[in-house]
Length: 281
Image 1 (cartoon, rainbow, N blue to C red):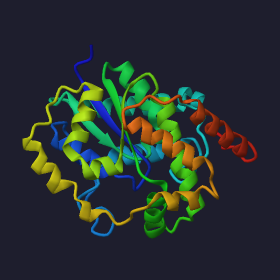
Image 2: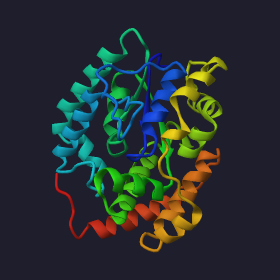
Image 3: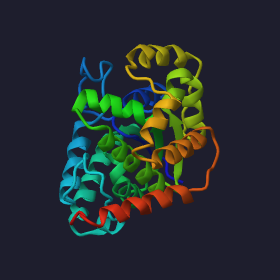
């Protein structure tokens, strides 16, 4: 059984991935080095995101003629293409360097939602146990935040939200994973982190002493957007699939094991739309 562990935080941009990463870190899972600094207007408490990995993910996406704002599916077979061998070697070296003397890491970059297979292959080849924590936030709140930060349209944000949930959910099936919502993290900090630790069977203990640290790091005051069911009803007029995927995610975050067939149906529907203008490797 592997004695080294990597916890990947997967979630759409503006979904609370930074807060979740810091919370997991405070529970005892070390962070990598060379982290992106805080931004007063975007993430005042910090991104907790390794710049090396952000650049790596951007490079891999570029190899696929894609980027984080491209919602088109990346075919699974592309991850076995020859250009990825060199990149897996780079990632393996990065992991060995960062995990040395720690045995565990928590790594966050929203782009990992699209690129989970490269992590899975690399960790498997190097005897590292990989765990995925998926955090999901109300799609309207994400759209509101992206409109403020990047001036995205609602439609663009909703399609990206779907892609950034559907891909990691599908890729992580059968593996070590945990689902939470942004609301759970905000409202039940310590119980949520304890559930993640239990789901993933991590060799750490989120003690009561962690509670104060979590309350200081994960602040409700940093939340700028709150959406309701009525907001979702308006959103699904443009993207009906949002409701089904959002409700599936809520059930998963409550500890249920919903049938993934509805998610596969949405993925297939998106494929049919994309065939008119497919990405090329």
